[in-house]
Image (cartoon, rainbow, N blue to C red):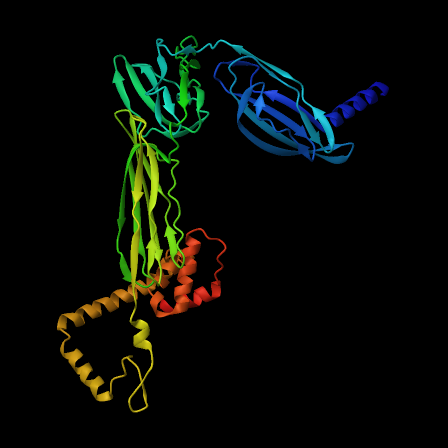
Length: 498
């Protein structure tokens, strides 16, 4: 019994030590192939953990960071104990042996240190960039020397031998394009070449800074039936995995010869639907830029005009690859609403052509917009009559004789087929009304701001309060969250015009 007590005491102390504050560092692998990413995880156990700011690990830049947390509970000596763990993961891509140093983590006011870790660079077991009996993996670029902002295309060619039967889906890991903005290269080509089925995976890269960059290898694993393992019926079972890494690519990025807004060969086209409109009616302007180059990171500047409400949609950018060259189309629309004349200012952009290093300019013209004064306010205004009475331009009610006369004219013009049609429509209305409860839930909610805007827009000129509400709704739709809208007033307005 005395020995049993000692054992229990040792076990209790061991469990308590596991549930105490502490820190631990682990890596995804201590042996790594050149170009493959490594993940360093630092786990801190405690309620309040403060991690170091790690930007470099033994001379290698950290290309990704993420964090997570978890909680656990346990009974120790009849008491409930909780354990809170925070984990930070740092991803980097080494090209040589790495010595990860000891890091300090402050947990609940106390300093803890991780153990240093050594990572060894080893030769890959996967075939690199050459064919074998089953498949091959190659990576190529249409350019290896570009300037900042100039795009290039990288293509990974996966070739699978005809007749190979796979037991699992192909496991593909894309290259790492650190230092570039990456865009998928559109439709991926698939075709037969010789004795292989070829699948192309394209990437459009746009460098953001100068320097020498290494595109790490793409990796693929192919699972085929393991013929060395057979069941009692002679059928093969199990999977034999074959893996391969592609070659790396060295890309040299040069600084721009001259600073520019765009790099490529583009043209601009601008359309405006009207330069003279009624008050508070929208003027729509569309800017379209297209040509050779990448427009993914381009953003047309906002228009800010005093006394004018401006609404713009999200820019639409489309890219395609033709004959190994990247072509882009950028389109953005604006709507201008005002009750007075205004001017849409001009815009200009500098463009650097990569071929001849010549600087050009793209221009968006200015437009003078004239607002036609509405006669509505005049027609509603009260004017004194010559006899001292007040008259208006509002249509007066017809006299009883005129009304009856007008009614008789209407009856005479009604044809027999219209009566039949009216009867049919009446019957159809009854059926629709019977089904209305089921359809009601499918209708758009008129009190949502987007639906209310559609309803009130047509009545802007009828009421200054409605006009002001439309301006607020446009501002909210344009992303201005500082504008406040009284939901009760909005509902009452919508009800007036429904």
